[in-house]
Amino acid sequence: PPDIEAAALPYSHVIISAYDGISLPRGGTTSNPETLCSAQLPQPTRHRCTRDHLHEALLSRSGTDGLPTVECPRACDTALATLELVCNHALGGVLVCIAEADAFKQVLGAEALGAPCVQSSDQGYMTDSLRGIHVRDARFQDAFREFTRHADNDRWPEDHPEERARGRPKDGAFLLSTDGYRVKCSAKLLGLTPPARWEGVGTKHEAALACAWAIPGASVFVKSDSGSLHFIQKKDASLHIYQVDS
Image 1 (spheres, rainbow, N blue to C red):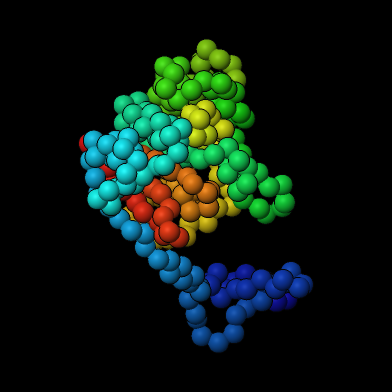
Image 2 (cartoon, one colour; image 1 turned 90 degrees about the vertical axis):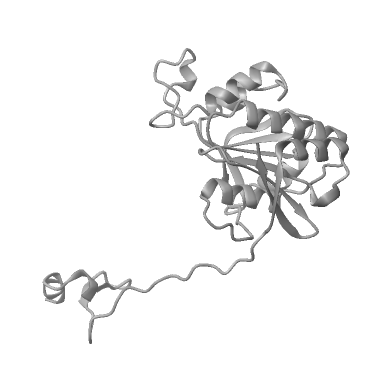
């Protein structure tokens, strides 16, 4: 029988019929598996600045010398607070996206199947814990520090004082409103497609690019486990990445 004959052949010589479920030998000479080509995406515009220069540019809201600007005073204050948060309190890699709450709902709040959406990776523990707590509040900073304190399994310890946290993943993005309050924490961002190619980075940085592109008016901070920090904004239909040196 064909399936018995195929079982004696190397795996590369066997195909599975989608119609009758029978394994059939591949005819002709040996061929290598097909290879998917990498997407040819454009590269974002890259910049480099110091933390002090970024702070001054955000504070002045001038955007001079190619530095980023946040015109809304509330969003600017939240961006400054987040810069301090990720520089002084993040003990590991993290992604923080700042935008109007309505902008998050516009992009990530759709209920249609397959549309971009957001889910909690910790069953809502961090989101509930930081409800009504401003990003400048010491309680927010303490929780943020512990969230970014990575363990071997990147989970809250099983003996955590709060039972809801025990064993939950320390993973996902922080979504902050321009008022400085959390919209979602430990958030898995599903269905957003990076519009540009950022060489040498992982999925967290790709997600940061996708956020900056898709969410109107977003300002995004992304920090790697190694400590490198980047700030991302969309300007005039193009993405700008600022490497922030200490």
